[in-house]
Image (cartoon, rainbow, N blue to C red):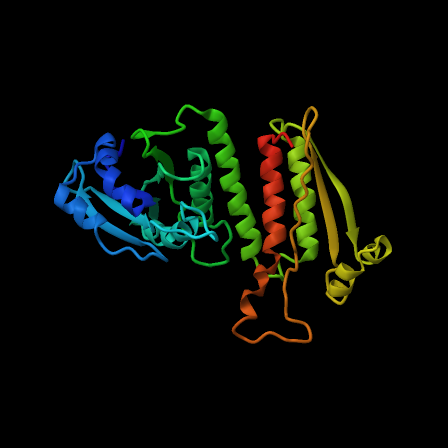
Length: 326
């Protein structure tokens, strides 16, 4: 239920055709009153098959001074083999603009308008509702970055999220504590991986990345909820790489101020596992192009070249914290 005694924000996110069919039911269950004509106007606007669209209106609260800002984030009805049916790529691109500008200033104090986000799960997806929810949650995590070097102070926002099943018109997972815990860990890991990628290489250099891996193992070892054993299986730095036979890694990074490294983390679940899985992520913290020097337009984004290692590191942390059986 939305608290109408204060300013609040409600964002409903889902596939365009499903939103047209289910939004009235969803809003009624949340106690939000809206005329059919206004709702149709919000939902029937154009929606790009590539980038989706958003629409917003203000609804009066219980008091004349309060309001509810209702927004719809409409994802395309189509998808390709390159993206997920829930289109988390569109959610990540559109959601930040709907989360901004909700801080309220009163003198020297600044408070945040509570934001509620409801993700409407598809009823005809090849994936389960939990898998669809996980993709939405990952997009939400990426839309809420942890890293910033802006000098202007900002107020943290308060977000409550939920999932609505379009199959049976009910809110999902409210009593499933294990899944809520798993999806929370996964979402936080997405945010932490993004924070690593967002940092420039003078901060997130090779030595810093190695420290991140060591810190991750230390925290997991102290986490009582981590089911299994986590260790650093191998850590080769600088000339040790050449000695161990990793000449390619050593050759690429040996001229840098921070020596190149290879770190292998290992997770062994409780009990026997019938499968061993290896994840590999590239961690070039900055790619200038070498002999083929990159231009001024492509050079700035090269800090993202270590995104593979950031994703694998935080996926490993999430898998161990959740207690995966493999």
